[in-house]
Amino acid sequence: QVQLVESGGGLVQAGGSLRLSCVASGRTFSRYAMGWFRQAPGKEREFVRAISRSGTKIAYADSMKGRFTISRDNAKNTVYLQMNSLEPEDTGVYYCAARRVEDTLGVLTTIRGYDYWGQGTQVTVSS
Image (cartoon, rainbow, N blue to C red; front, side, top):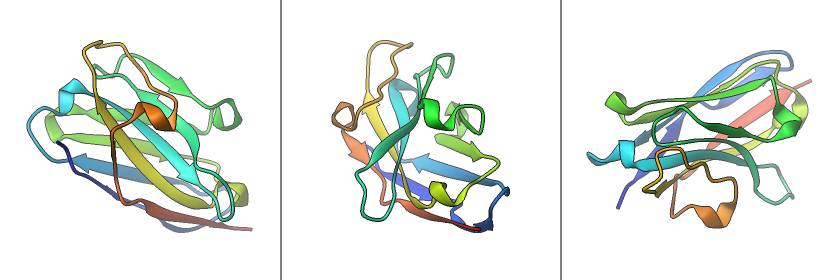
């Protein structure tokens, strides 16, 4: 079992940047595929970015292409989401998720694909 703790959210003006972090407990972080999702007020949770165990394969949602970057540091048990050129529509709670997988190149893009979730971090983008 793994526990996930997100941080780095906050209030930022449109056009600004934030870097979210998600730290995982345990000693087997490198065996987990990781993902970021977000949930805007009154909307369903949606996929943002995913990264394979090795960090060499990435999946992304087209709507955020070019502005958001996912990365991971297996030595620090941490996955990051760098968000640039933020827009008010990016406002919401951002969650990281994990699933233990055998495939080193596997990426998971659906909510049901993940077993573990963090508590979320609030991102608010003002216009």
